[in-house]
Image 1 (spheres, helix red, strand yellow):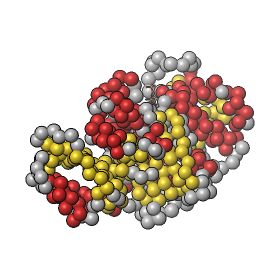
Image 2 (cartoon, helix red, strand yellow):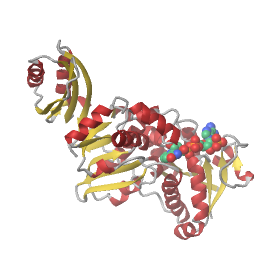
Image 3 (spheres, rainbow, N blue to C red):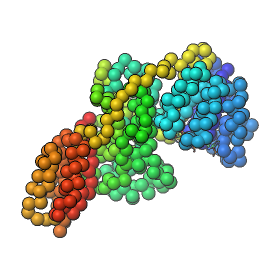
Image 4 (tube, rainbow, N blue to C red):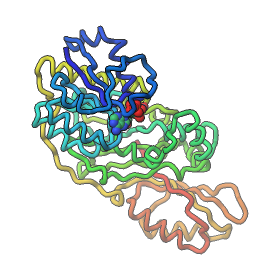
Length: 426
Ligand SMILES: NC(=O)c1ccc[n+]([C@@H]2O[C@H](COP(=O)([O-])OP(=O)(O)OC[C@H]3O[C@@H](n4cnc5c(N)ncnc54)[C@H](OP(=O)(O)O)[C@@H]3O)[C@@H](O)[C@H]2O)c1
């Protein structure tokens, strides 16, 4: 028998408990021995729990788990940086293997924790930390191991995907949809991490580190959120044959890693354009396998529990058969990170200009002077005295685009640059 300790018994913790209970027999067969949850750490012992559970199983003292020599496997489902990070380190130092769904701790401390696990002869697994129920961490380490991964495109944040899908389907503005999403429980009362792109940045940091056998510093990931997207941009995207998605992008260009999170125009013909509501997807290209897309529920109690329990089963097998974690080798390949100013993209630009002859020519000259060529120019419906203009560029270097925009903003007849969104040709 293998004994587990759970740190946290909230949404995912109760899901893990339920899966381990409901599928006990098949899990026992897969591991080769029974799994028993010995103790569960919670914050509030008096809280009413959504599952029927013996009160004796609960504790509010972490020492009952990380200092219990009978417990071989600790499942961290508290979330956030502290105390989760400290508890994970202490458990590893006490020779316990770890399963966690904590994207923040893994994105920030993966290198240190893997090294600590190696030293202590234990493992750390984190399938639940990226894209909830979609298996991607272990596939990257095992099923796609033959490949050089060249590109990863992810829709990795369900909240923002729900908001953008709803804005698209019902022609609504961002704030309206956000309020509704909060009411329905699809967005947290404090949605900053989702909307700012930070949540997706943690996840693409983790995927990139695994895909390119490196350690990516989250500070090197360019991040832009979705708050500036307006219904008008979504309508323009539609007219041009695109939808707007918050994309997490990671490319190994051969000259460095290009890793970023931002809203992007995605062609309606691409499968990622069909990923709507709270669903997540990962579209990747490996040199041998070609294009692969994984699609599913990127969060939620049972989908996340599915990934966490898969890690528990794998880790329990390693413990039971006394076999080491063969995925935790210590090879770290060093890669240059390409700064966003050096990246080439097409751009959608929405301007408001004064209705006067010659304005468009002045704008075109600024772009031309900065080596920015335009693929389309659309003058929208006349709204006196301002005229909305939509431009799409060919592939241009980000720094050249920025320079032209600064010069365009300074032109007398330009009222404002309303939005700039990258067009991602996947
Ligand atoms: N929810 C999802 O859909 C989802 C999806 C993917 C990944 N994840 C990740 O899974 C992890 C858990 O998320 P969750 O949604 O299950 O969180 P949650 O519902 O907020 O549950 C957190 C649990 O941790 C306990 N806890 C909090 N602070 C503690 C402390 N200082 N000491 C001891 N216990 C403490 C809480 O105790 P009480 O119950 O007593 O309050 C609760 O049981 C997070 O890393 C999250 O990012 C979640």
